[in-house]
Length: 464
Image (tube, rainbow, N blue to C red; front, side, top):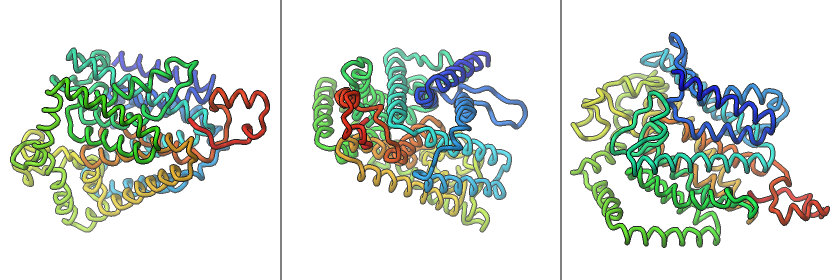
């Protein structure tokens, strides 16, 4: 407990100090800690009060420092996803009426209001300049590369540095999870960070910014492989495909070089290829554990439909938050068919979409589907309306989002770090064309500004 109190206090003071000194750097520091900190950094509260996690403390510090700013900022560029987020929250609040455990369901709704709705308002309200967007993008990449470094050390030493410091973190033998509760979520975080490493470019005078993306381009895919999970591997490939399609010719050349490097590694380390090939073939064979596990994600939808059909209230609003960890679904599954019902007593619901369908019914899941489609449409519009210089970076927002959508189909998202990164990218895309600043111009353009070139000063569409 004392260790967590010290960590939370130091993080809160750091974010508060930076927000007071330089708001852009303070917001970037907040996002950095939200992505880096394990969920286990928390202070238990008395009674039925929700735990005070390090993430929630960071959000409260942000809120306290941003209240005056929020009164002046316009959220109209992200008004549609924000409105849908509020509707989803209201629907989840109504689901407490039909919930198996109303108190547990309300705690889930409270967490959603703080960690998703409030966070999105704060991050979207804070992104008022390209300088802010740049700092948030770089701090996100830095956090993910640090997590990848922790995972790499864990891979080759068997020691999880985060678990050695943070009380309550479980370092599972023979797996790599770094600051995450599960290796699959760790792998997806690495896949979501890969597009950032591909797109961000440092200036010549900033050595660490020159090297960080280069390190990330190699370390993030490697750490994704260390997760030993098929879903993140596909997610990393999906990120590369999206960046190659949307990022333009220079991005495709960069990906070709990385592909050649990967081919050399596979040739030098045939065991790596054998591992990937074996897991892939097992996934297509329902007679194997991996094959049944893949099929299990599809079976969950039928299970949810059957359970929701038992009453009109549950059909409409579901069984409430946290219900998927209470309902005994073992009757639907054979031993070893996926979800570990024989060990847990309930299925693990390794699909966040299916889990949300079960928890919030047709109404809640329908609203959530509309929300995600709206987000995807906004991201694509941002990319389409970007000029050539910006298009590579706006492609990052689309690629990262696609990885997150894929993750939700194949695993339960019980680490909020993934959602913080996702909503940060959504907010960046929503605000990208509504901010005007020359603070982030390249050194050559900044020289023109200092010399008073009017055509440069008037320019708003600038690159990250």
